[in-house]
Image 1 (cartoon, rainbow, N blue to C red):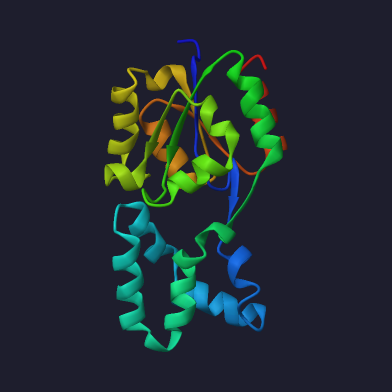
Image 2 (image 1 turned 30 degrees about the vertical axis):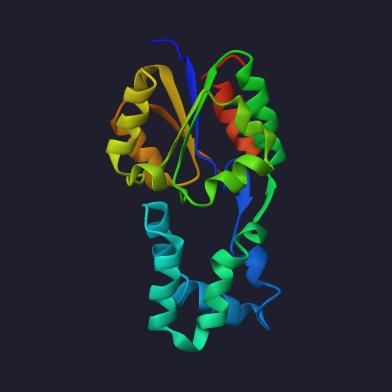
Length: 200
């Protein structure tokens, strides 16, 4: 089947989201910051908000567990916008190029409570025909049910779609469903990989 659709992940592919953008000015040194992000406000904890847990519940749970870090924990969502730094220009330029020939969709692991901040910040989101957000659906990649939800909701076929994500587990899950999936490392690599599949 010919490729008709391009499905983008957001964080790390189109936008530069990283807690370090916030916490590097909060902690005295890098080691202290890394300890906090690897042991307190961990990736595993954050994923549960992407799965649908409320920000308030998540914050309170962690503050009760680590009361000595209460102020630092409150910053995570209190100043979350600082973590959302910039668009990734090379990928966004490629997105606009792809839009001329293909239909664009988004499939992102993202909290339902913060996704609107990204929509307001970055104009390129208006280029998408449809977007599926994990926090809204209470499903999260690499669970294949969220990929299937995208396919069903927008009546598209995996075999006619390219999926782009910086998380290899998500890429592998998409391939199992029949997507042509590209593991994103940087915009230059993505463009090179797509050039072997598509006419850009």
